[in-house]
Figure 1 (cartoon, rainbow, N blue to C red):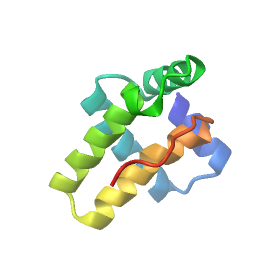
Figure 2 (cartoon, rainbow, N blue to C red):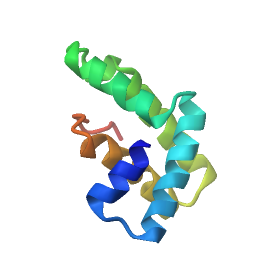
Figure 3 (cartoon, rainbow, N blue to C red):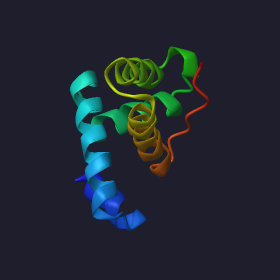
Figure 4 (cartoon, one colour):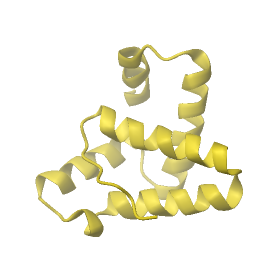
Length: 100
């Protein structure tokens, strides 16, 4: 599993693993894709030189951010959003800044 690899490579604590797992569960439920599929899609979009503003990855992250901020307090929403962005970046997916 991709998360197990991520946790092993980052030597994540148990509490960090719980937070990331929860965030990934919410994100994958929202996108309808596994985290591996999301990473593969992002990698394909980057490989095809699709502009960031036109990618599904950007759309999903923005929708996820909106959902988080409407359902959680600010600090929890930021924590879960950062978890997803960190996973993408850990697997060398380039994510330009998000709009405010």
